[in-house]
Image (cartoon, rainbow, N blue to C red):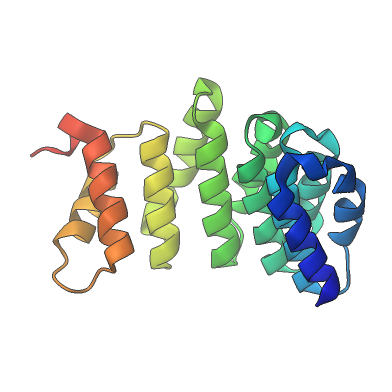
Length: 193
């Protein structure tokens, strides 16, 4: 519990704690998954300028022993942003096909964040994310839809999914309604009909 809390506190410090990156990268392979997850989150918050953080998170995403830890690594890469874009894109796209729904969800979120502003990656990401609109897990579908909107997709299937979320009477959570409504607003004319 102490190691996990230490990693969390370092993450809260943000980029000023960059000197802790080597220790946090090492903590990614801790036998306690909660420590590795806390380290992944901290690296996401700290590592915006650290290639070592990106490298450690990619290794964990690709070869981590636990899907929860791999999910945390995907989330960390999404938090890092532009520095992770090129090296993390292939492992994140691959993670979209993983059997674990949490990993698919976090990979979808991260690839949506990283693909924004990069036309080539956005095109690849849209192609990889669209099948997730039919995922068996509702939270995966929701995050995939939001990432597709972020990447500029306006496919009829995406619009239909978002409209169905907004029009569900009483079966969608407030968060789902808010996100779907905001996404439809971003789509503008493509969402009208």
